[in-house]
Image 1 (cartoon, protein in one colour):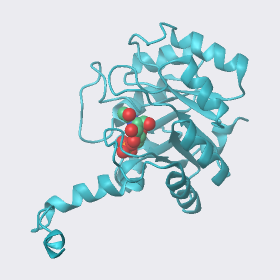
Image 2 (cartoon, rainbow, N blue to C red):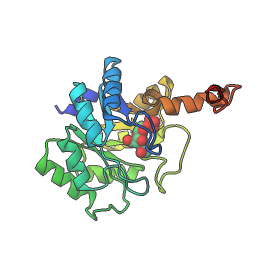
Image 3 (cartoon, protein in one colour):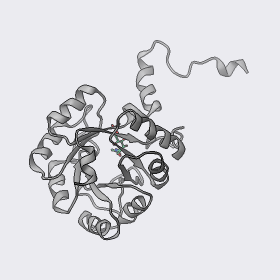
Image 4 (cartoon, rainbow, N blue to C red):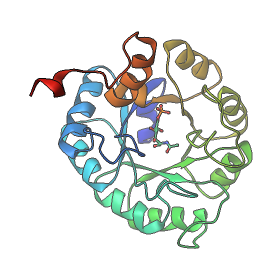
Length: 237
Ligand SMILES: CC(=O)N[C@H](C=O)[C@@H](O)[C@H](O)[C@H](O)COP(=O)(O)O
């Protein structure tokens, strides 16, 4: 039994501010901890959280596994790109560390397998390999990953962008790998969640569609007759 058994058949909710929005008002560890507490109350079996400050705050607020990552930059390998980032997020209280396991060069020059080894030596955390292709998933398991997630499909040169989730990748990985496969990336509906479990997912991660008021509102406003930015409030001063 590992912590990954706690995730089986469940919904994991990613509690993160928008990465490309420095002014996202949700960018605050206290806020993310309240969001995490709310999704756990709603039935989330685990939460996925970015950065040591948010991981620390969320860890103190919930009693489910915390999947921690540490985003650095927005280009190339940016999800927990180095062993140092991984160790820092483990120290902050993450039970499972999500790490980019694509075959692209890593900023510290250390192969993914080395990072996994170091995490094993220095922490009790499990390793979740974020991948974008089937081959990367297979390589990540060879390198020692405890679980594989489809997080990066659609965000690397090896995986063309799509509107919806990459259910095909979930199916291929689940058929091939001896470790849990976590479906992540652009899940927006109950129907998609069901299809991921049919494809063999161990758990499904949903992010912005649950936890980002900014992201959700920006998708709703364009279908209203009144475009945003037309308030008269500013004129009343
Ligand atoms: C590619 C990348 O950086 N993905 C990140 C991974 O941690 C997050 O930015 C996503 O919000 C999360 O994975 C889930 O989000 P959604 O369910 O909205 O796709």
